[in-house]
Image (cartoon, rainbow, N blue to C red; front, side, top):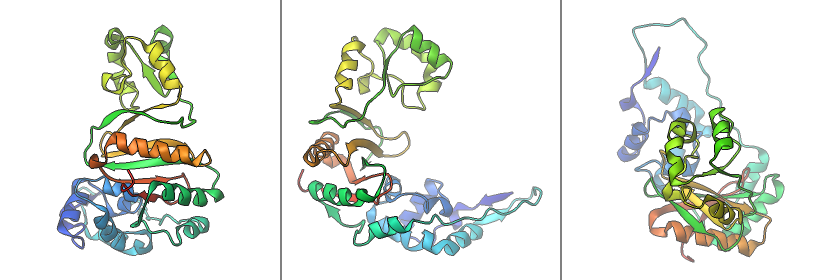
Length: 288
């Protein structure tokens, strides 16, 4: 059985970068599958560090990646039956994607209006037009609610806890995106924590999903102008759906601006906007 000796990995990178990757327990073959935003969400890694990583560990240098893993691996005393070695296949970008990246540098940041215009051009050749905002924050545990000036156009399935919803959760049938409950309901909901917690659906007073009047709260959220946000459980990163890139351009600009202001630019390391099949465009905070 193969074991990784972490101290032997990433010695070709700056010490602080190597330490961050080892602490995150990321193998070289995992590093090349991560987006720039995901790498920057690792504590201790900034944008300049990502460039250092990509220069050595990338799809283009797949042989180097394989050799680095092999050099840091040892065979343990307990041998298992010989099995075919897993071959790491480079993730190939399509010609269309490669063409879209021409003239677009991930190091350059753009004011929100310009970033939206660039993304609009890139998205013309894609089928999925959803504009996603990725925010790399300086810490985990951030959560809150944003009052957007315009609707994102996304329909959120909201459920209010009651006997019918309780039966569905018991059967592990989750057909909602948000669950509202009263403070009194939380005693009954406690037994569903293992089901709802990992999905980010457990009602919480901080997110406004525990309320004395869930019916009123449901109407506010259904109006589309309220957007809850929170960092991922293990990474300081926030993913938010801003709506369609085809919607009114100024509405999209206003929503992005308000989102970054609400999260707080002092708590943000970097922010990017992209569609599902396009490169990401880095946003400058100078106009906020």
